[in-house]
Amino acid sequence: MEIPPKSPDGSEKSPQSKELITSNTGSTLCMSSRSESVWTSASRSKWDIYHKPVIVVSVGVAIFLFGMVITSLACFLPKNKDVYKMSGPAFLSLGLMLLVCGLVWIPIIRKKQKQRQKSQFLQSLKSFFFNR
Image (tube, rainbow, N blue to C red; front, side, top):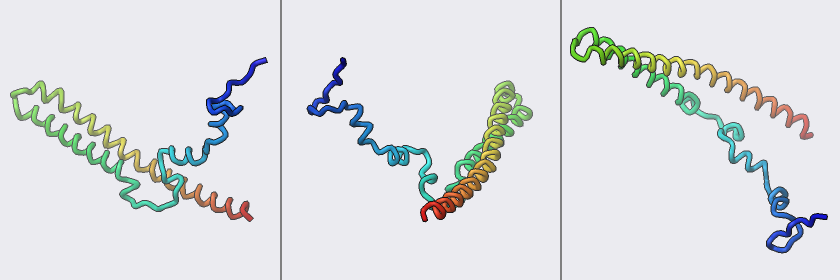
């Protein structure tokens, strides 16, 4: 028969069982979540919601325009023509990629906002009917 190891303070419970009993999983889950807005119902401004995709679109447009300038330099300046011809299309494609990613990100955020509103409405209905 195997005897469970005693903890250093002399109690019969193992250290693993103490951790399981005293842990408060709900608050740990709430504190470790990536987005606090899921747990709080505070309304956010449009800039707080859309600032990341707007920044990605702006950077994408800037890089795309820089790529257009570099590509057009290959036509007008004969010196370092090969460098312009190689780097221009690279900046064009990078800028276009960021631009498209930012433009696709905006409808995704809108869809998530609608789903969050529906879920908050359903939560309030559930709490209304089940807390009576």
